[in-house]
Length: 404
Image 1 (spheres, rainbow, N blue to C red):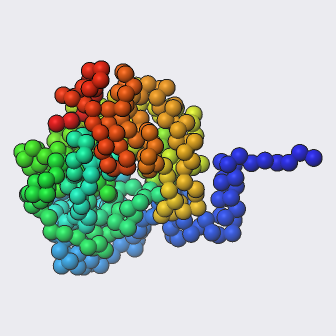
Image 2: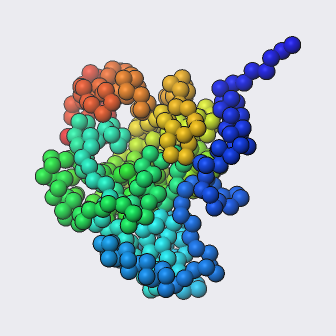
Image 3: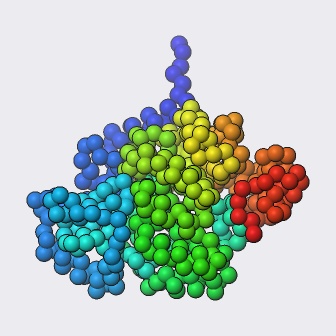
């Protein structure tokens, strides 16, 4: 009698389904989630009939006492019913007085929109630029890195969920105005400032003001983003950016809806808009087992990138490790990662890297013409550089990037 055999993918899918029937998988979702909603963790907003204006106003006063001053926000308009409509990201939150948007940092103040996190980062560090990861900007240099609390998505595998899914007042924050951030970066010998860890779009005004000052001080600007931003604010920001690193989290609307609580199309629009500018574009895709590791879908994604963004950008295919709400999945297999990289190279992409696999040859940079190693790396450490005046030292092929 023939035995039924499951593939690895089928085994994982069936195991998760079984866990769900006994209630274990339910712990991965928000308890008050309605049928049809995605499983991202976000504090629910009050229903219209339950909204308490006085309570919301009192809460705002408490936030102010905690040191979070309301700073005028950009990109909003009045809705027909008089409420405030935020137009910064594709969520388009419509807010009642003293109500916060989905990001939890933008707040309606009756006749205007404000941001609560201007000059109040909750995370500040000095990182190797390779940690972002960014491989085409001043290899071996350091980036002054900062983030505020909050996010406009709710990815179920977020590695920084402790701050991305937190309210600003729930975090330990710093008083760091733009001019002090730039001075600190310079005094620490950093060559760039990276807006990272959470989604920088939510602290857009703060980031934009730092970017302008950084440019004047010959510091490079790096935005590490999910790409969930509307075209008008993006176009205003792009002239001040040197690198835009976008997390293209998957290539189906279902993946974005179920895993991230967002939509794919706005991210693709961000990449197409950025491709029309002079900014260096890097794309990172975390390969999550059974969710976005289908090779046929990845092939379509790579073909789209070649057609709409270009062949000489950096692509990072990164190994997933169990975290946050997806601790029931195994790490991505090296076989899957290498197959995805082969597919990307066959599609015509020239610089394809594997992430979270220290020691793998695919974390090095190879000349697309002669095939020789031109940047050697081990994790975030740069071991060798064979690029001179922006060209391969061995054959003279121009290598896109900022090298000096």
